[in-house]
Length: 317
Image: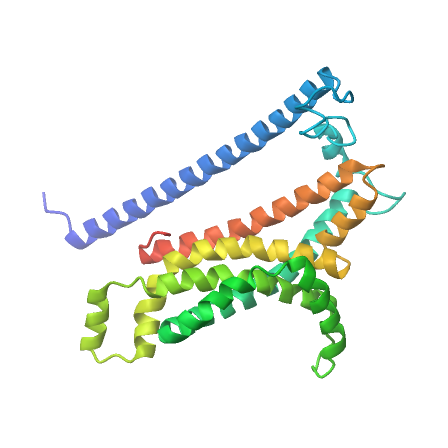
């Protein structure tokens, strides 16, 4: 019996390893999905239990200090039953009109567009700032505190300013400036900061021996940046991108509310809050839509993280 071909044996071993990796990835994804589903069910159970407990104690009476006084009351106006909230997805505000669920989906798509544009620009700006600050340590010491201070400005205060500024000062552009673009700028404001801060850490994370090796090759600063610093920063950048992704959604929603921009989840939340006394379930539906949108954004970035870092054999920091 002849010995097996070593090359064929290596190929079979590699194929077996890839199949094992795919099964492991699928198993982990299934386990995390089940864990998340159990978390949602447990949250719904706690919500229902709290509501039942409050109604059993008659929290309309103000004698109970823990429910109806410090904690929310459990009547149907403050805490509508979960089944009523789910049923509201299929209801419409007017006969023949779109259902609340469809309106929420359309609003989520509109907000996602604003958030995606803001996220892309903010991530790019954050990386550029990180590179500039790492390149010039003196600038880092002078500018970084102001970058941090910039995040203390209330977003709800600057959002109307940016929307009004966009309406009256961008006439020189070859395209018509629209309000959703101003909302994207508001999302940029929240997005660039975590990317810049984690980018600085990531760009400085490369091993000193690797820097010495690049120096021995007489590599320029740009070559070191492209071939060493940026690849080393990826495990630090992806966690920042997840934070930035959720922040871009929050920034877009707050920008829509503050600037009065129609079409997105922010405006829906504002409209449904105005009719809360007659239909509190609608506000809950819009909030659920915002939460799901944030999860979708984080999920997309997580998939990208696994693909990019997995191929490079890196692990997120």
